[in-house]
Length: 115
Image (tube, rainbow, N blue to C red; front, side, top):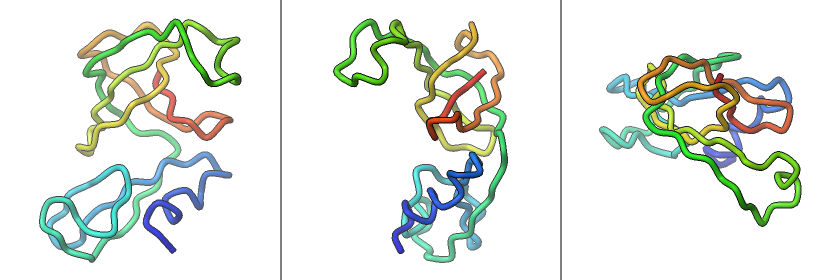
């Protein structure tokens, strides 16, 4: 099973899973087969219903080619650095600005959402 498939196994429970290297302690996202810091294959999983982080940047999309998102335009996206270290692109549901603290969780569509 690939690292990405293992990362999505708990999606039904809407949990966020991050990999953590047992050799150097580095957290990483998205999932990989080896640690991006030390190249160890001793990778474990950490799971949480939400992760704290800070908004690095935000933007609004006013157009999409994806039919399921058209009814939700404009869509606000944020680049969020988790307190654990990794960075992810998330849908922003609140009015958080760069530097603001947020909590990231998976929504009902299995997408990362920050509020």
